[in-house]
Length: 297
Ligand SMILES: Cc1cc2nc3c(=O)[nH]c(=O)nc-3n(C[C@H](O)[C@H](O)[C@H](O)COP(=O)(O)OP(=O)(O)OC[C@H]3O[C@@H](n4cnc5c(N)ncnc54)[C@H](O)[C@@H]3O)c2cc1C
Image (cartoon, rainbow, N blue to C red):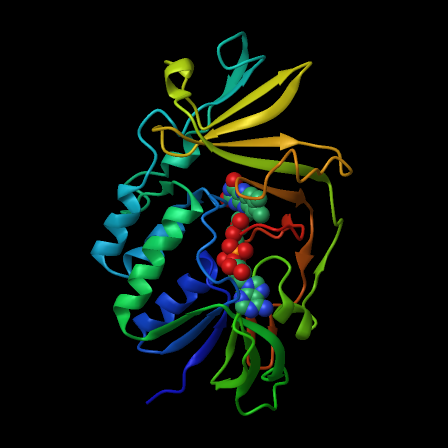
């Protein structure tokens, strides 16, 4: 049997890599540091190209993704208000989220949220029978696989129960997010400005749709003397994300409880190297999103 590839990180990129390898009959061991899925709705958009790739994971998987797509009217425009029930300053058409249409691609993009998209990927990965998905398994060392001369790859893993073990594989896929530990091991760090803006993401449930009424959109910017941020409708059925710009020093755990809030930093970093020996670094071309260490569970 083919030696398994080690995938570090079971976010959308790691799960996508595992599914893609399974499509070619390659088994993977996907190691995820968290004990359970995060539940935070980070990534919103699986674009047309991503959905073309997802079609290769099976018709059922493709249609499950499509089933969590935001309803019509909530992908465009981007609107600017003083309050969502108040004065509208203007709007920008954002029909790109609807995809280029059937003359370009048979696949349709999906605007949803990472918690739902990831859960569909997890089900699909398990259904292949080729993905060994391990939660609570953190990679702490890359032992082999960083040099071209290495015949295989190996990582050291610590479980949330405190056990450690070595795992060998044919290669490593570094899908451990923007602050990738594996990336740093192969010398493929991100370069560029570390922080341009600081944001707090507040995820909440409220029937705001009835107040928005016919002024639907994909991003609803609000700016007034008391508040500045952007409301993102996640499903047009009461799930919302509010992204609030804050000063770097304004992070306050009492005010922003960890269950619903994640802070993040917009950066402008890029990676010069993607590969080192048997190690591939993967991401969603989203190196500008940098997560600061927070107690998100
Ligand atoms: C608060 C926040 C809001 C965001 N909002 C948006 C948005 O609105 N729209 C958008 O498109 N994008 C958004 N992003 C960016 C989005 O999160 C990323 O594009 C996406 O998560 C990248 O997917 P990924 O699989 O590369 O990384 P992640 O989703 O970060 O997954 C990486 C995984 O690797 C695991 N891991 C890390 N280290 C190890 C290790 N040593 N061993 C094992 N596992 C490890 C982590 O636990 C994690 O589950 C946001 C990001 C944050 C933090």
